[in-house]
Image (cartoon, rainbow, N blue to C red; front, side, top):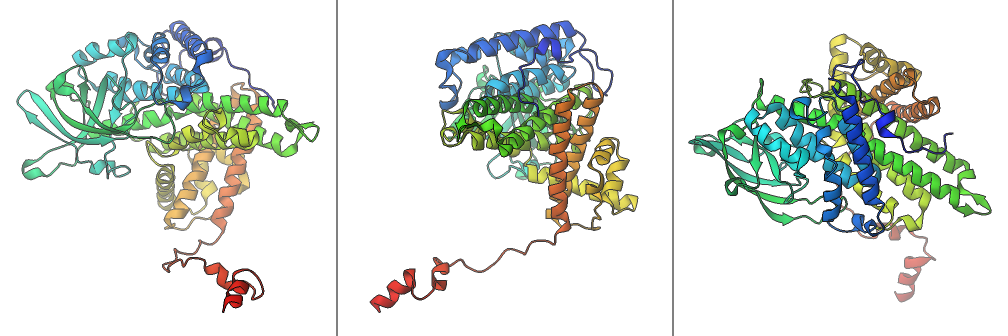
Length: 537
């Protein structure tokens, strides 16, 4: 078992050069990208190494000096394409920025992902050139941040039914509605707001459009009505926002496809980027776990000497390697020039596996640390609550698994097969993983599986996809000890999920009431409540 992960010299060890293996676009200036990542790494390490920074995770919002010092390293250039003075045609530089940030603060890593992946990249790709040239330099070199507003009260998973509407009024678009749970609420300098076209009579069209709002313009300001007391991620403000803005016609995003295709391209690229935060965060969980289990002595032995502890840390290290493989895959296949609107299977796989492992790694660290970790001012406690929302936002993992499973089941029907292994072996994104998973996948799937079965099938498919990425990474020379741990962790997941598919479906929900204290009526007559009742009768 590998016991320690050393912090990488990112500029030297990460492949930020011209892409040769995937369909994304490589970085045109690898030396410039490497220098940027090195500067960012130094800024984050220095900022979070200060003695007075311990309270960051316990207070709402990031202190001004943190954002000032971090943004001075110009991290948004990692997300900007070359034509705007950045290095973000490939996802590799942005993944590296999120990795470095998430090692120290998951909230900071997410802030980089929100501003870079959900604002900078779609604006660079789809905004009017004059708008992009005016706004993007503010984020690249002047410390501004951007965000994305999709979710509304009552319309979370059902986002396409959103009620925020737009209408053209002369030379402007009027956009009105309510948005909530947008990261950086009340903080971002710029917003992308999603809305549906309004019709006469108050009805809304089925399309989706996106509008750039500049908070420095009074007519484009979005009002934060209520700030939410979020359970974790204290460094990022969330809340309910009132949208009633007038934006110029040039502020509507335009592409060579409809707004829904743009939205899916945007979301799938963001989901593909989840691995960047996962690599840095899980790396921190491993380092904390190894350090604690080396220092902690129980019954005269280091915790690290106990078999169960070693098994837990080995799985942690395997999850880090899985996240690394997913990050490599995204860097090579999800570049800005690629249309990802139809790549739901791969994007959902990256997002779901990365976020599941984020949460599991935090739970493992807390289990290893014990009681003192169950505190807001301890990294283990903060990690648990900070990592949990990643399984929910940008698509709940249960929903994503069900969608992946439904797609796979449909492919199997059309191919005339019921064997899961046979179907996964046909797809180049899962073929190598299916070979590694082996006989565990010898499962016959019903023609019309129940929804809960689709969730399990989807979860298996995402692990097999990840096995393929690990296999690819291993063939390129990644540390073989970590590759072995990753394969073991994924095969363990596949085996557990496959065993559930072999079982009969669990009973349906009971419709009967739950009476208070029903179990007490079953106690032996001479004990407890029954004896007390008899004595007073």
